[in-house]
Length: 89
Image 1: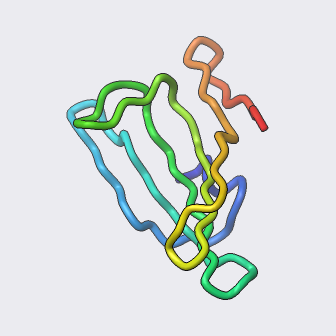
Image 2: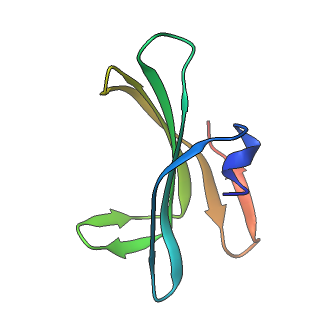
């Protein structure tokens, strides 16, 4: 959650999933500037998680208008060797 706070204050946590290795999915959202707009911030840890697979640990931002995704982009990728997040926008 700390990494998402770089982008937004006081988001609403919509989903949080963990396994034996810890947190692997966190979805947080805020209301957008327009009516019916929601901005979702999604953290996913690298690996296979049920039907979902992430090639790298990262943060993706998706904007929704009336429940329909309009735009999505990866904004941060985690480098485990350097223990740093890299902005990839």
